[in-house]
Length: 354
Image 1 (cartoon, helix red, strand yellow):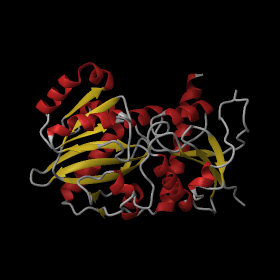
Image 2 (image 1 turned 30 degrees about the horizontal axis):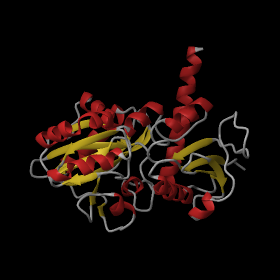
Image 3 (image 1 turned 180 degrees about the vertical axis):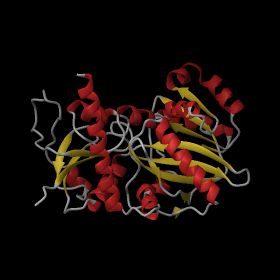
Image 4 (image 1 turned 60 degrees about the vertical axis):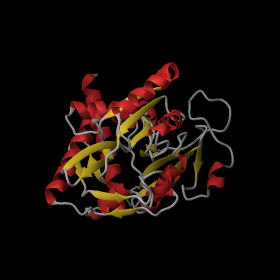
């Protein structure tokens, strides 16, 4: 019999997207082909401690119970964490998972893993750096301004004047390094600018102010390494004013157009821009690209990239591939294949330099 490939699922983590990560990992776990793969589930709690568990399907209280282990080789206190996998699948959203940190650990260990590498993960997480790369690639983006917490502390009144001068309401304020719409505010009156900035600074030292676009929210899934492919685009139709955390994961009233009802030329442009943005960030394996589309003006704007997109039951990444002819179990299998492929390529490059 062919030996099963052992996949190490890493989930949970220290970010504000901890709960979403658990749900994403549960969906990946359920869609692993049990005839080909064996899952080893590693839960990381909010303090950064590691623990092997039976599966991500366990109740949260059971995941958090019992002894945890440190992962560093010089850790002497607490239990050891005995596990080994053929490839690792980080299902960790946000900082300390999607930002290059866990990817750096896996690179140091010289093991295959799913998704983007250190650089692609880091720039994909930092929306301010991401925008710079999109501009360098001449991709269409919204007007934005970066505000540092240190500058805010020195001159909050001056920054408020500048923001109110540069942006017409409505505009958005968001942490530079977070996802799942955590810490985002839609500012509809200028009086709300201070509160929106202060909320965003609770999550990051760097904040983005972005022009508000009145249009349709589109998403496109990308799959591949050096020769990526793009899915059919989908549309997010928020129940609230914008697609915030509650709308995504609590209320469940958002509607989705999968695939989106768009003219053929717009579909082609979305897919082309998705691949261009993926390459601009040196992404690998997977990513979801988010867009704004203004039908009257025929204007399409690249909003951001997510290098570890959601895999929950409502997440667009697997839904769009399903609509494009790639079912969830085959998608997971393909992501694992791409992880092995990228590791082999990097190993060849290392050998050539020795």
